Amino acid sequence: NAAAGLGLVGKEGVPQLLVELKTADPSVPNRLVRVLEHLGPAAAEAIPHLRKLLEADAPPVYAIGALGAMGESARPAVPDLLAILIDPRNKNLSPTVAQALVQIGIDERSIPKVQDQLKSANSAVRNRAFLVLSGAERLPVDFWVPYLKDPLPINASMAANAQAMAARRQAAR
Image (tube, rainbow, N blue to C red; front, side, top):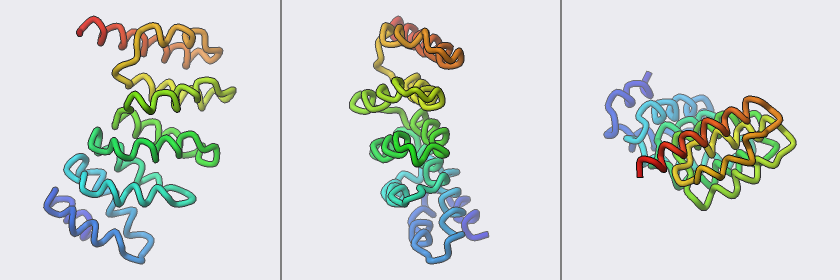
């Protein structure tokens, strides 16, 4: 199909993909965004368009995945993704959003918003927050101490792993 063909062209095909994204056919954006996802950081030009897709009442999972695949270049979308992660109406999207945030990385300003999720009574919400925060570069080793006793063993284990990663990063500095 044309979308796959444009994907083979690489970064040079991104402007045409963006033109095609504006089509009225609802099945086309999904296919085109999957091509952008495949292109990853080379398709960074599409980030504003993908962010616009996130404004929908039901943000499309494929747009979230594409932003994650674009890595650090998608940092401008972090506030949008955090809003989706925190919104209880989007709980089905939270695993995808958490993974995208891990791929993109969060900055220090975003940490408190995610950290608030660690206080949730919902263990799945805490789990997603542990996942996102475990990739944060600047968290000190002692940040994780209170979370080592999370009642859900997987979360306590994630906190222990994140603490070990923080210790390795700190030792490497």
